[in-house]
Length: 313
Image (cartoon, rainbow, N blue to C red; front, side):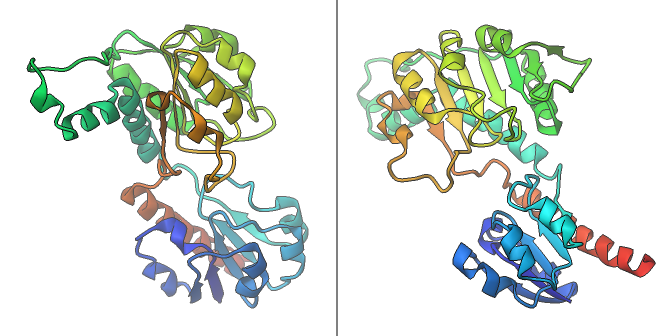
């Protein structure tokens, strides 16, 4: 069996040798759209994180039997075309829950405690010149008693809710599908969540219900001092509206995801004047060493299960 991993670079320094136990494996660090057909040719199994496998690629590769998505999101594969061609598609879910939840708090504390400012203040030896033993020109508040709103209360959202509860936060959530009912937490409409919450974290997928969910109108509803973090998908927040709001309102924003990735050089966030209100990370929240190891194990399991199903048939 011939297997190809199209974008190994997305898995960082992970040990990929286990894939070699499954068959004849080819690794590509990256695969550009113009390289896709060449890199896939003669392979029955594709492993892709972000490389797009569309209808045209599927039609030109009749040898394909299995597409493994090295992620939870499935928008990079044309499921209808795969189904018509008799190709099985498997993704992996749940592997990054702890990593994303932990990253949520890491990003929150950078904004809440203004750690970038205080680190720079110390490194520039300004503390050495201080007439006082402490410097608190940018005060911070405690999490206890804060109202925390979660947009998308799936596995990650529930884990964040659990951790926030441990800090003494009051939790509410908005279901983007309208179908999620969790008795443990208060469900509210979006307007209520935006106007009442001190901290808002997004852990939802990008779809028709969530695209540009947080637009200029939504941002105007945020209370003074509110912190909004996006650890779901780029495209849920209107980035132009957010950039404008950061300069005009007393709000703070952190994002691990953008509508276009990698980030473009002329992105509107670079023009924000109030940079102390903004923290960005390059889509790293999912990628703890443990999460990547679990992801790889689950991909291997998906391939082995698929092989076993062929024997049964």
